[in-house]
Image 1 (cartoon, one colour):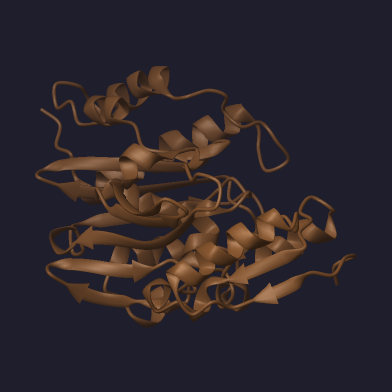
Image 2 (cartoon, rainbow, N blue to C red):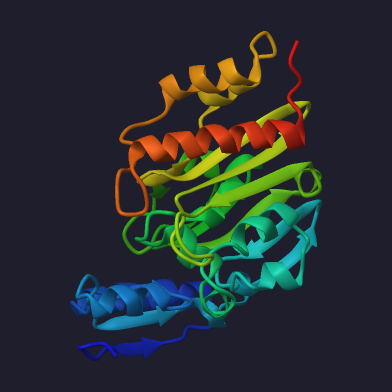
Length: 279
C-alpha cells in the first residue's frame, strides 16, 4: 500500500491524456503518466515517488497497438512485456524482455514503463537501439517522431508533459541473427549483473549493453572495434574496453572488476554464436 492518496484517470485519446496532464499540473497535483504502475508502487513505498494524480495510458488505442504496417512493426508503449512472449514477431525483443523480472511481474510491467522508468537497467530498450527504431512521442507541442538513437541518452529524453506512444522497427531487422545474454550473480529473477544484446546485420555485429554502467547504451565506436577483423576476438574485446563509458557499476550485484570479467566472457560467447570472423 502507498502512504498517500491520488486521483486516477484513464483517457481514451492522446489529446485527452496531454490535456489532463496540463490541467493537473496547473492544479499542482504533480501528475504522472503510467501504464503498468509497478515502479510507482515500488518507489512510492520507499517515498521516492509522490503524486496527486496518475494518468493511465492503457485506454489509448495507439499505446496498445501491436501490428505490422508498411513493412514496420508498430509496438504500443502500454503493452505488457509478456505480450512479446505470446506473439514473437520480434524475437530479439522476446528474448530480452522475458528475462526481465518474473512472469507475474511481466504481466504488469509495460514496454514504455521499462524504457522510461527510473530503475536504470531499462533492458527492453536494447533491441530498439540495435535496430535503428523510431519512437513516437506525444506532448503539449503535438506528436513527434525521432530515431531512438538520437533521443535516448541514459533514458528517453522527454520534455515536461510528454509520453512515449509507440516504437516502430523496420521489418528487415526482425529476423536478423541475434542473441541476448543476461548474467546474474544471484537468483534467476534477481536484478542483472549485465545484459548484452547483439544483432548481426550486413555481416557486422551490433552490441547494446545494460547493467554495466548506470544506464543502457550502444556505442558505434565500440562496435567498430569489435568488428575489426584484423584483430583476434581477444584483442578486439580488450581494446574495446578502453572506450567503455564511465563509471562501471560497483554495487551489491557485483564489483566493477567482476562485471568486466563477465563482460569479457559474454562477448566471447556472442562471437562464438554470431560469428564476426577472424582473419
